[in-house]
Figure 1 (cartoon, rainbow over the protein chains, first blue to last red):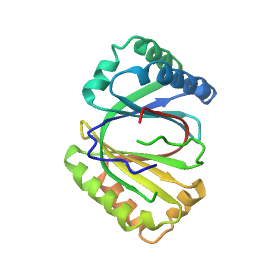
Figure 2: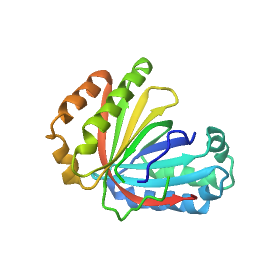
Figure 3: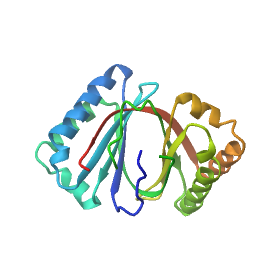
Length: 108
Length: 108
């Protein structure tokens, strides 16, 4: 990772999905499709980064938005609700939390 | 964020601390000190990125390690255990989970 910047003012969404291991690949596919088909067209989208835990019981989306306002408005963007509903129906639970980056240190 | 690379083979540690809002700044200070004083000297360390939730009940460290083996060996590095113990004593709970990055999309 290139050094992140705590002064960028971004809203960092860390959304943790609990999932059956058998459904991990389907959930990743839906979230990838949501990112490429909808989210990257939403004003204020910066990045989405999908992760799978080694035990395949969790999927995390680490996403950056330019502001909290942009993230809030995303929910009304055409197609966003549909994709989020699909992801929610496959996961056992999900827990979207908004963070601020406070400190970053990198050797690269 | 510059585009992350799902082919980098990194072990991504996402460690979520639950914390009393009054203890957030102390916890961040300890984790920052641990990163700068110890972790960045451990072979295989790539980055640490400390986040605070808007409601100040959670702190997340998103950290990259070159390999799972490097992360496992970190625990025996001089000073690592001491810092981790301090952080654990201030947090109500912590939940370190190792992930692989599967997909990354960025507009920057």
